[in-house]
Image (cartoon, rainbow, N blue to C red; front, top):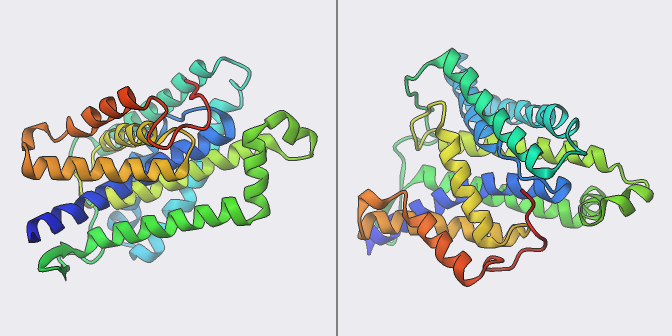
Length: 291
């Protein structure tokens, strides 16, 4: 029982990281109709900026991490200005491929500066464990789950309880009508890419202490997050979160109780199964995904 609880909480933590990346996908998609495949590179960049500020510059995490999140917001805005804005009138597939190109450029630049050597970002509360039902749970896993819960709550409050959120939803539902009503649709596109960059930064900072920090580590997280978005029903925040948590649990439980060597297979086998049964996701997508 203790082992199950430990693996279960670890799966929730892994799923929470995927949820953060997937929410970056959904925010951008809702505002622009584009799936931003630069998210993988942005997650990687967020992890490396955390390493730069907290390890190389020696800043305390409570100073370094907020700085990284703010910087990554503006990196996301820059991606929108460089990739989305000039290609807005082109077919969506062209823009999607361009975003993937941005992610690959980010990885190439990081490879040039840091090489192939792997690095580790120190975890918050290193070595600390919490006893839950007789199981020793890594305190850092609880930190990840808590950070994700706070982030999701803030996003929900912003989109459902603020004027900014209402305008954002109006712009995503019908951009042309929203623009006629004086809503700055293009500005919301920039904001969405920026918010996606900030979410990628948080995910990278949370993931880096759990995985070796190397120039492609964010792409693995991006693929898992995309699978979570598909499982949950692209366009629905609740569905994406459920999909991410389920994927994290399936991966960890499968690794522990079935076969470790198929660790990377379990999430995508589940995705194929669910898509075959429910093509619009477990909660149903709100609109057709454009790629």
